[in-house]
Length: 455
Image (cartoon, rainbow, N blue to C red; front, side, top):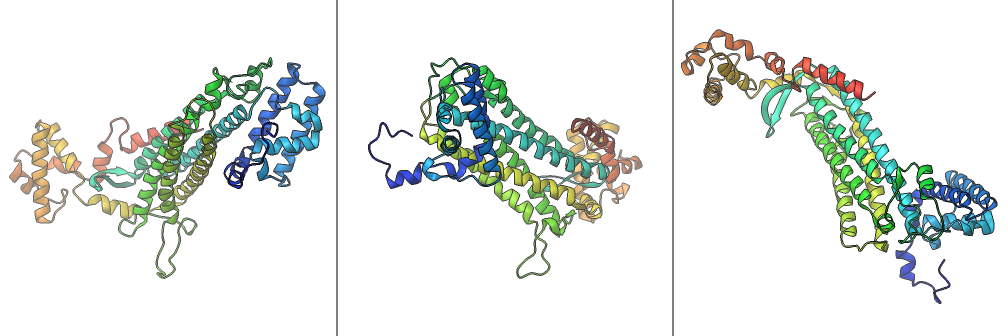
């Protein structure tokens, strides 16, 4: 492609390090779309003839079908997806193909292709997250009042409902969707027409190509257009945060499926056995989601490291951007699908959840609240009294519900029989009526909100 300037061919190492076709062939749809828009614009501006435009468009149609049918031959000597398609177009359309590259460079071409691909990746992430939210919402609806222990520091804290717990992740993944949506909005500007770095002397119409490709507008600065990769970093950052959130849920599934918890059971579809221990049911899918989080975090760090020292305009270093994005997108898509399947598939053991919720004096806060509300104790004093009562119950092997009133009155004489009305799990859960609380009425409100929002 640049033989006029060079007398000799590349070294063997260059033949290995330069080609990107092994991975950037995934941009073929975007590359063809950009070329179609560019060809139409060139003809509309009388830069090429309508006959050339038609020959180019017909050739691109043929190439699109060849690639879709698996018949296209990708050649490493042609380096990348752009030259592979251009070379094949020359075989089909003849001299007209050579006019397609008028007023553009591979620099703005790849930047355009890449933005289109990442925009689609943002949409795919949004779809996968919505599917996962719906699976969580279905479980929440089925378990609005299923009591389970809420934990802090992995110690029993207060009783909550499983429905409430599921809705916490619905909220979390909504924020992930927001990050991908924000990233898609910011990246939705067209680099096409920036050419190598300085724009072009041809009278092109960048608004027309931007509109055809679904971009909101052309990028305003040609240097920025070819060199910016913060859109890719933003996608990777959103993907890394999303995978971190998935990893938290995956970690809980690993815990909950263990016999020590027994809160949920995954079917055979999402568990594996052991090569030596016949009894094992391993939550491998959840563990792999948790483990794959490291890949996506690494993808972000890798690309940030590539970009951090680059001068403005295009550098060959930027060839390293695509593999990181492709790996992160593939990993995220697979992880979202697996997690949505696990959540939809899991069976909840309500009895095990309740037994666990009964341990660790989970209604001690309700006891303290009663002292503050009914006896008008300052909360810090109420907290101290409740702690003393918990200590006494622990010493006698009782729960707060079974500790005799007389024992409580030894610590605080003003306590009455009414205290037992707040010490059951159901009383505790039902009392959490504040907005966003775990009371079933509030959980149903949250479910109704999300069902409407996810339509």
